[in-house]
Image 1 (cartoon, rainbow over the protein chains, first blue to last red):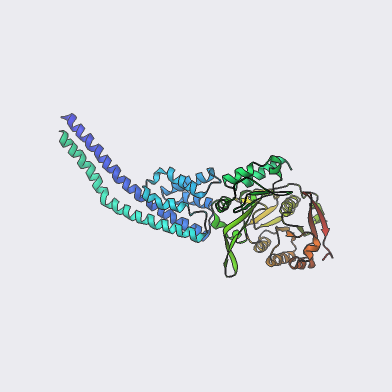
Image 2: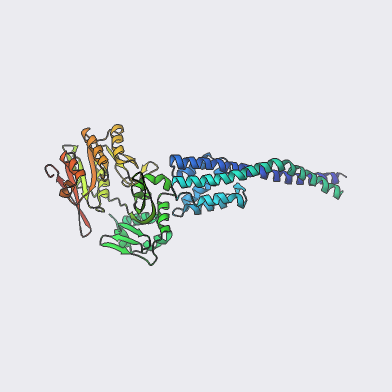
Length: 172
Length: 302
């Protein structure tokens, strides 16, 4: 009997943690999008108002952005130093690819991918417009991710627990 | 000056080019790399290198507009927006102090150039620091321990900036406090606050600031013995020099001219010379690629 109780507890704990992980992933996506939207605000203001050169801007964003956007910009900075002489879009895309911490899907990464081809090559107006456009799309994804988190976070946790209980009942 | 150093400067300038063009220029012989003065890149034409005997076309692949845009992106470290003011003036200065002249279609706003689009050609001038080239000139600009204001003249590409840089170094190391108004950042090539070329131990550099404003600012803040600047080109530069001269500061500048008589014939400089602002002219002449310098008194020459 004791073995059965221990087994039931283990199964329930495992499914509950799966539910919790799934709920946490929703929260991380929100945090990631929020940090990127904030970083784009800083980027736009620095490029359009202070005309900050890109290496300095990347340093600033790596230091001042929220996590995980700061990791992405730190990766951009590293790649700018190691890929000297390559167009900015290449290092930007390479940093996007290597920053797993962003945890975004392809659709959510698309505005950033497109933004990379506008940065560094054009005047302040055109870069400012491109940043605004990317920010707008990320903001929409953020709102969607927030409502998804509010809606599904508890559900996923509860589903995890319920699945554990169900499996235990079936097995017993 | 060693060939090794000159080749290193060649590669430093070539680093501003996209890989394909870098490879094309990289196929020059070591001797040609050492003598190379500029990379000339024109959309739709073969790239060429400027050697003392003239331009030499290279490779079989023509330069594309994309190549030109890439060069500007590389040279500005993806910060074209930060270089807007210098682009308005037709140039950007890349890492290592290499100046890139820009041609294309001017964007006009209220009758003034606001930028350049549709870039059609670029010239990358290979910056070379030739230490001691002004060793024999510098003492001729000093009398009784006082520096005599001087203007360095030659036609474009004659080596004015190179000589000016070494004169600044020589004078600075001889005890003069030199304030350098380096609008194009090609004399001191300051990066992260540190000059990448040797401009002497008593030299203060104000870079990327319009020359006229820089002169007044340096005068007010750095109490210099000498103010140095490259290429007097506008009436406002001349006015700033007049003001500085009235404050008892020595001036060291450059100008485009073949010789002193040509300089006197041009209104902008004639005024400065008539007022006795410059006491000496350093004339650079070039015979079969070799440069020589002569120092002339300007008193009564105009």
